[in-house]
Image (cartoon, rainbow, N blue to C red; front, side, top):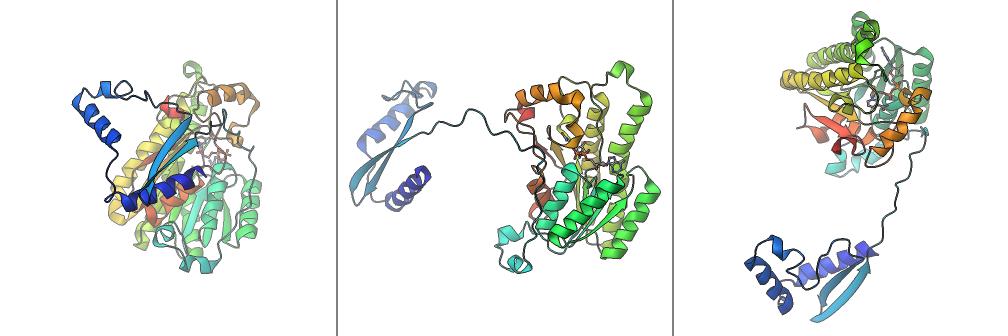
Length: 363
Ligand SMILES: NC(=O)c1ccc[n+]([C@@H]2O[C@H](COP(=O)([O-])OP(=O)(O)OC[C@H]3O[C@@H](n4cnc5c(N)ncnc54)[C@H](O)[C@@H]3O)[C@@H](O)[C@H]2O)c1
């Protein structure tokens, strides 16, 4: 009702703005405000006083020469946003092929019709959800790469049952250069193309003090999060270069690559994600000449299995408190950005690190 009234008023006002003289009072006020110092014109310069936190909005329009005044109440916003559903899995729904022909140019810019994607860490969590999103906007083939056999296989089965997309699961560790290269070769042979890579495989170490961080654990995390992202990007990048058609690579970094998390100590994870962000920029600069775009998504605290461990329960309250939106991200909160970055809609965007964190990094 509120927006309909405003719209109605705006349309009428636009139609009549050339024929109706400005009300005298309004004209006089603006001249006064312009004559004095800018600050004094705010609040004190106006007879009605400040307009911050108004409980109503007065709208004046002119209809057939008649002045019409409306007063619209300002509805108080809810105190707390809703908490996210706890990892509720939604089934993916593929679009009917006929729909693609009817999309407006802007909507068609998001479509991924006929493309082929690789999603590492696609067995569960953010990777699986982004794979679902790709399947919903026309991707014809998805290769899920994950180190966990059962999880990855289940994900591939569910995704193909839900959408009819040709989904293949490869059990591969992203640190294994030989296996990765072989896997990507097989994907290109099977699908005849490779257009999109989402690099979501990763692990986290929290509450590890730097002064006694185990060096083996440190090296392992860096190896999975950084070397693994690089090896996968390298294998897919080579395939994209060879095809001559370019592609889009999306690295899942983290806000931890830009800020230091609180209160848990996790120097290694933070350093690994900063490296992923800089790797993204470096690859974007090197591979622009091949038509390959490379961007990263930096999520804030997300409600995934990665964080669903008893040791983190108490800290989650602090995380939410420090997030302006007062919630953890839902597993599907990255989906639309992933689709955008994968699509031609973002054709001029490369080397960008996109934060999706409920506002965490604002404070
Ligand atoms: N959950 C969060 O709060 C959060 C926040 C910021 C960034 N991230 C990042 O998002 C990505 C996905 O996280 P998630 O929360 O979905 O985690 P998750 O643990 O739910 O899923 C990660 C997947 O990666 C796979 N994986 C792990 N190591 C692998 C390896 N060596 N080779 C192949 N696959 C491997 C796992 O088997 C798992 O299926 C990670 O890179 C993570 O760092 C997560």
